[in-house]
Image 1: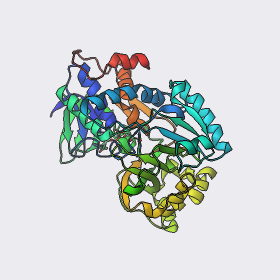
Image 2: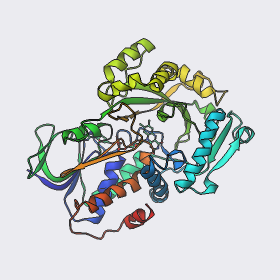
Image 3: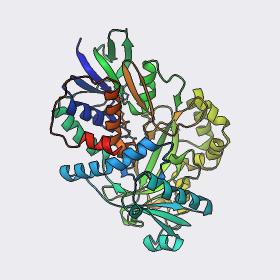
Image 4: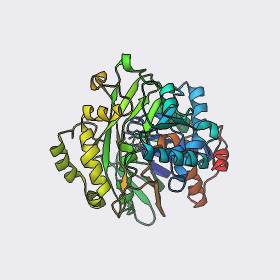
Length: 432
Ligand SMILES: Cc1cc2nc3c(=O)[nH]c(=O)nc-3n(C[C@H](O)[C@H](O)[C@H](O)COP(=O)(O)OP(=O)(O)OC[C@H]3O[C@@H](n4cnc5c(N)ncnc54)[C@H](O)[C@@H]3O)c2cc1C
């Protein structure tokens, strides 16, 4: 049976960057197991492609992701330049539609500075200034951040894979992990088709399946998850420049920020609006499960299990379902929500479907959405769960933080090697 020192499960942007950092510093046998035929086939390519600036992340509850996003910006910028990956500085307007939401913008100004952004990165605009900047956008006020960039996280992940492979990582593509056994002396990883091998240590970066993989290692049994497909629509070419800046709005329901529609300037020059939020049964259901409201409610009852059932007695969640979310299942209803801030747009400006990506938020034992990343470990494994937006932005630094924790816990006691590196590990850790 083949034996590795470290086995990483999941070849998204997180697993691939972790494989890069470990393989660039240590002389060891490392593999990355990915069930698809290449890296970044799921969330790491199926996203909006925005390099986010962390003004909207609460420095108390989302501190690590905020720090990681800030530090990673320059790392992505350098790699984009070196490897010819798109880097479109579109800027973002975070819009408030009323006085109540404006208070959130004032809070975001403070959070942005606490998270390390400079005052030049953030400007509060009143309604007239918003219209002056973007004549087709209407809002009570906005926070403008010129730093925001549109890029291609799938392309980044594929580049990092090449560097990691050069360092010695074996990418075992097309292999799905279906069980893990630890007998006290050895950890065996079972793949499909009766293939198995052993590893001293496992790092779980399985994205929408990471909770399931943690549960295979007898961890996180008290958590459950839900999967929402976010669907986007591409603006027909002649409407693409109706708005030139990426537009987000302050979340109407603060606990569920991923359900408010936005206008995205993509790295390829197209503009998309979305998402429609469709509850689905698995992290890879990219089509189907759309229906009328009655069908969706009955599907929701099939999908929601475990702790997530408690959500159905949360008044905010129910209000979201009845007023906004289920009504946003159709393109027309979603565009109606966008018309609140881009009054000119019409459903027939969007004839082609854009990216569909799946978010898999973790639900706590109390039946609430977990706001931050969940990291769990035991003697033979480390798990990164609920690694959601802006996870792609923060991946280079966040994965370095994980590697540092593994070093401190003694899981990386292998001979060091000096390799020419695209990024500087010590510099990332010093900035944290
Ligand atoms: C619609 C949407 C929009 C987003 N927009 C942005 C954005 O603009 N900016 C931003 O920073 N972030 C954004 N995000 C978040 C970001 O995309 C994710 O945080 C990030 O891609 C997560 O990376 P990952 O490597 O953890 O997961 P993934 O990319 O999902 O990778 C996990 C991998 O594990 C593999 N896997 C799973 N189970 C197994 C198994 N049993 N055996 C082997 N392999 C397995 C999967 O095939 C997959 O390739 C968005 C997310 C979504 C869904």
